[in-house]
Structures are given as C-alpha cells and as structure tokens.
Length: 172
Image (spheres, one colour):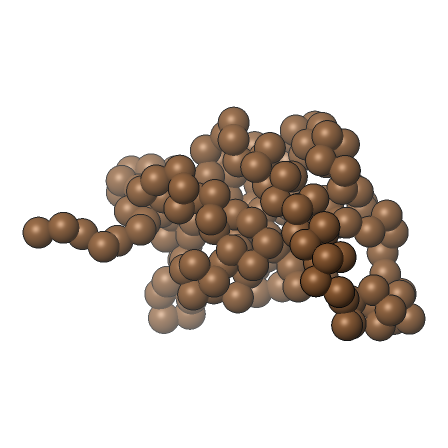
C-alpha cells in the first residue's frame, strides 16, 4: 500500500526534546506576547508600514509587483531552508497547546511549503515551521513579511546573512 502522507511525525523521544526546546511555541502560535521571546522580521519593505503605506502598498498590487515580491521572499526562504533542518508542526490536544513535530517526506514538498503562499499546500493559510538547529520558529505573514521567533539571543546571524543576500530587509 502506498502512503499519500506528505509529512511524517518525528520519533517520540525527539518529540519530547523538541517540545522542551520550543516550550514557548503554543503561546507564539496564539499571538501571545512573551518577554522571553524575541522577534526578527524580514520584509520586502524597508520599514514598518503605516496605515497609509499599507493601503498604498498592499491593495491592488499589480501581478508584476507581486511576482517581484514573491521572488525576493522565495529566494530568502531557499537560503534559510537549504542548510538547516526544517520541521512542520501542528498544535494538538484539547486546548491545542501541544505541538506535534513532523518532517517533510521530500525536499520538493518542503520547498513548495516554505515559499510565499506555500502554506496552502498543507491547507494552512500561511506556512509555519521550526528550525531546530537555530532554535527558532519561522512564520509567514499576510503582508509580504516573515517572522522569526527566538527564545535565546544571539541566534540571528544566519537570518541576517540570508536577508542581505536575498534583497529583503530586516525589521527589528
């Protein structure tokens, strides 16, 4: 029998290790602010958008401009995911507060998920993954911006290098 699953749960012992490492993940996933979690954002824009900027830059975007933005973000994602382990996760349990970590069955599935609007490949609105080696969670946002969530300072160098090489901007 051939399996159609695109993701495979990581082994139980590793699940426990990752749950301890990312104990803060459920609150970040629920958009709760935490003092112990730092955020680094990457955007195609060189500044945080004001209400007026949002209206001008996010509404009625031409297909060419959206393709340019998507290309910049896709290049950034490729640099980030090419040299590190990437795991998907789903929140389980009655309160949806227990992450279950899963690995992608193929590199192409991973690349199709970690790209602009790639979350739809797994029926998610936006992609969200963890990067265990970097100790961070990586989320796509609706406004051509990606967010990294860190619980330990000093782990941002790879993201900074990838942003500089890809032509996107870091917003602290």
